[in-house]
Image 1: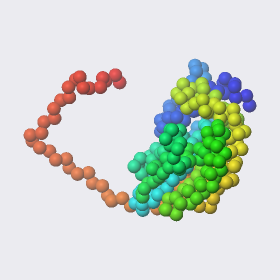
Image 2: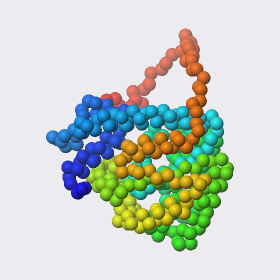
Image 3: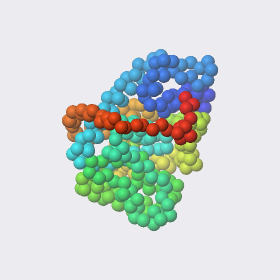
Image 4: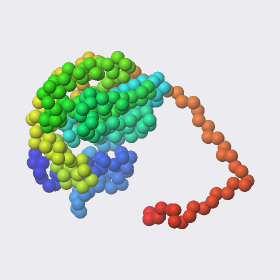
Length: 306
């Protein structure tokens, strides 16, 4: 298929635009309009796709309800979990992380997405800057990229030496075993997309002003070095797939399927149960005869444009 075709590109941008909305709003837009054409005269979303999308929403909401149960169980039983999300640029890691955390308490389930190390961090023990973000009891931490940067982008782009690269492979299995022995559950996902799908997603980002910020010079260079990334990915999976912290590969060419499959698998990794909450009764507000609510000064109010 020619991904440079303008009509196909516009259709894909339209799909991604809808996908970036909250699912409830996306479904409401579809119900009311049958789609959201980007250009005058463009056809709405295919009729046959509506039932599929509704089925996706229903299953996503069901799984998110289970994630809330998992969250409550993790908090009440003082579990500790680390979930790593790795994959090529535009593989969909951010999308699944968003859907996992969408309904959860950020005090229980938080996301860590570290920038490139600074000059000081480059002189530290490699894993040192990740350690402060590890979970305490009753927490789940989702790493949007992780210490596996060394086995991927750092190796391909020459940001680490051969010795540092080999030391990483000697150290990471022991590091993860230490985490597991300390009571931290380590779950690792690799989001796998094809060459053609990454090409299409990059084109979509280039032509979508709301997503151009996602493309960095490093991302564009990674596109050129597709085969280099393939080789280091295969090496990484082979050398760090250990019984205590195995890799799980998520086929991710279809974003929605990847999200559902990943969330369902994540839930299956825990023997959780629903935590019974005490019944909540809203108390009566206390009222005092001498209470007076003072008006807010007009110059403090946000202008009411809407």
